[in-house]
Length: 157
Length: 157
Image 1 (tube, chains in turn red, yellow):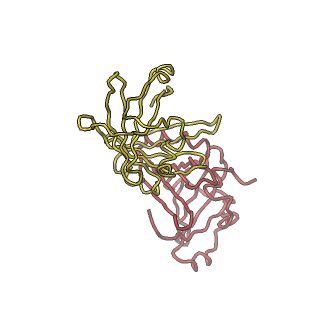
Image 2: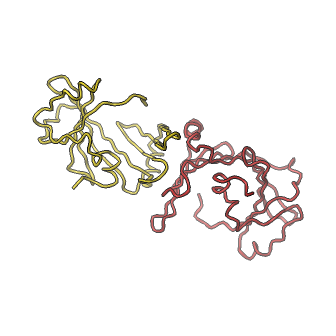
Image 3: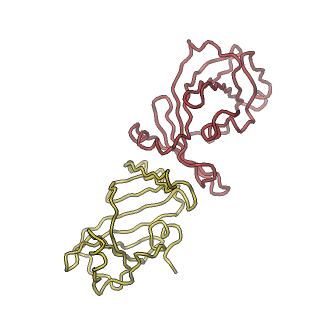
């Protein structure tokens, strides 16, 4: 868990690059709670480890707690997500200018969505970033592409 | 976890009996979610074991899942209850007619509330039950004395 603010930009993918040489790990996450609830309960499996996260963003009462849970615990709770889930394979790579990227190939109900994220140390660097030709539309500010929205509503039509 | 319906009656306590010979165990439970949320997330510690329970009662989508969690997991999540908790010591005893009872002495914010529950095999037995003199008001049907209501709203005024 990090308390820092992530500076990142998120893009669709116009042309899938060669992923064969990249490290890849399966990620799935789902939401037990629904939009409008006072707290968000998220289950996440990432690279073989499982987590349960509670978040509320109610002004002064803002709270976030995450615990690691066992696979058995995860599997027992997972059906409570009721299909509000996203599943993807995350590929880690580096652009020719040295910028690291995470490319997510969604599976399940969100296939064939593919998105790529790049993270920066400063806002200046984020603004100065020139995406390579294989990147598609910049969806950094498009709330429909947030994890929660994708799990609830599917791929934007 | 039992799928059966419990037939029980719940009373206040007019005069506390001698508890010194009874088995006693601490119980605490708290609610991460609030009334009106689509799901109830309860944390419970009972006799040294800890549990996380999810419940929804939304018609067809009704669901209940409970997992045992470690004490470390419990302690990490407990603050997320934000004080919507109840803590009590549960005493197990038997009335002179052989009926088993559970007497809960509340601590913390709900002190000095004391309640006693008796469970029956049949509805006829529940109706026929004559409480001993030390029992107080029958609150079986009083929703203010349900666990969830006590945790949210405190002792009925």
